[in-house]
Length: 192
Image (tube, rainbow, N blue to C red):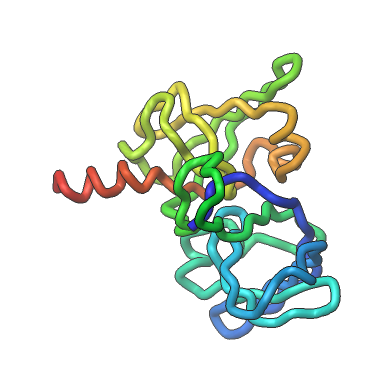
């Protein structure tokens, strides 16, 4: 489980195809604190640490993950939002995030607003799981959605989030990972 509060923006140092999977090597200042088999969210995708190096670690994204996320488009040097799993007894500053990406969306516009930024997104497929002023996780970042329709929505990014996530590198046409609110997913499942 995660909170959607990004700890670091780290860099992809190596991308290697392994059959239908993708091995990612991430250069990270967190490496000395990590252990093999630990879960870490990468742009909101929960992946397991498999190999530790002095200043980097390796994870593998399987074919199913690559089909549903933007991880397959990562290249060496790309920034990645990193969050380690939450600890019990810590505050839940964002919202409950599982690290299980539901879909992707395309950035359709970025508008600077004198101290904040409005990002608009077009959904890859229509969804009723995003609600006005509800939680949405974008590339692992816990945010509040507004101007919601079945095919699009917007979020506002504050300066801190802009500076401490990979939002500052996003532009129109880029794909992002989405995780819908878990409570909404359970409600939808119970109604079907």
